[in-house]
Image (cartoon, rainbow, N blue to C red):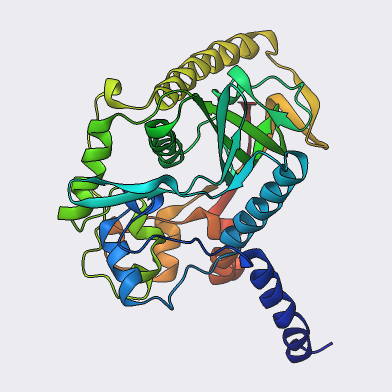
Length: 357
């Protein structure tokens, strides 16, 4: 089948998938207000959305997120039809902070007899974690969910929604993130549902901080925003920045990030200790193990190494100013073709035995 026919066959299908994912997605925004996502994101992006309303992000990741959100909302409605609100305006009357009118729209709100449960729904390609037990089947929650490194902006968004819900609530507000993501546990990649409770609401001073930034600044709030911004990619944003590396104090990092760094350092120390032990325990020996369905050798493994006469190669190829050059040994085939019949005279093969894990 020709490429033209394939394109005509599947392009409409892909377009329909995108349409179905976005169907019923439009929020009913109170005129003059901003939502939480806009509040905690780049203020310049919010202005550009008003100038170029036809420009919207168009990626498969966004389509997947919309579909997951749509199915999850419908599932919650099916299970709890009487007490569930989808994307309600919270609070009913917008609040004014630093001359900015704010009104949230949590994805799902379930009103119980003793508590209000709010849920923010997310879909991610991959969610890193550490010290994860292997007994999970379809979902991860509780202390195990705290070992996953959830993006800080998702936590901030959920905390902000909890703050707005708590303003008028006469019951306890319990806030969750419900995330579908690919997670690696014991070397195996698998999709899980992650249920992470967000304990603390944003404080009033934090809401003021974001409102003040939105009202007075044009620079992005998060370092990664410009790299993913549609307006920046299309050359429409004059405020785009390339973030310079910043020196941070460990105590200023989110707890999840600090825990991940500490765990990484522990693992590196353990790796060095284990490798030192195995070098002695397997001295002069090698073992065949199976990993991810493939056999590989570990231990003291012999391999063929080429020792090249670099000066001879340079003379043969007529390269001048050779002291400024570095040979790329990964392109051995191209080097052999250039040297032709003189390859063997400029190369000596040796067998070396190295420790390999």
